[in-house]
Amino acid sequence: MPTKKLNNVNLQESFDRIIAGNEHWIQEVANDQTGLFKELAKGQSPEILWIGCADSRVPANQVTNTRPGDVFVHRNIANMCIHSDMNMLSVLDYAVNVLKVKHVIVAGHYGCGGVAAALSQKQFGLIDNWLCHIKDVYRLYRDEIDAIEDSEAKVNRLVELNVTEQVFNLCTSTIIQNAWKERDDLAVHGMVIELTTGKLVDLDITFTGSADLGNVFAYKH
Ligand code: ZN
Image (cartoon, helix red, strand yellow):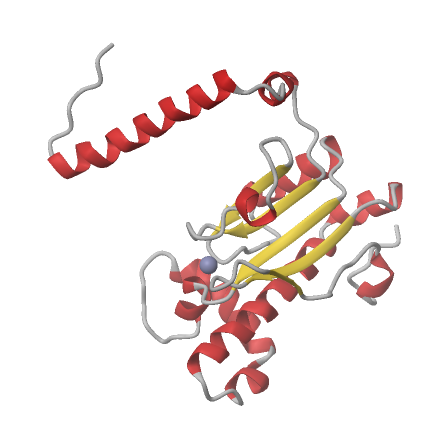
């Protein structure tokens, strides 16, 4: 069936690029001699769950130089892990309990627009309710953030602290805690991407069990 023409020339051109890109991709698949695509058609067994920002500049596969099939991905604005977010929880549950991933990576990035917006007093609309979760992180570290004068440095430090808190949110979830009761090959990491270099910086806040979470947060029964 022929595709209906769009009402605007620029809109049509950018849509055509998507279709052309797909045709190029199909050609690559047809020419692939490695057997990768035949393998992918059978199923997936990625070792990594990547929870990243929806920002177009931080695609999981390119940043980690991995191939299709290597990384299970969830992305949202400012890489948030919110305990009542059924979308994130469903991805986490499937990745941890069905795919049995070994690494869960929360990946923020410096210069994150979501974090910068959360640090401002400007209203952006519906998204403000999402950004409030980042404002809550700011509230925990208010003294440290307020002591930083440079506005860019302020945002970048909150990016790091936000990743730290999201890692903690994952670790305190029943999904991760119950998985740790069953196996010892599951690590939760916090990392930040430098947009200017592409480098993935390890924040060195890796958890491999609930022992370090402290009272209340670690389930015993
Ligand atoms: Zn971002």
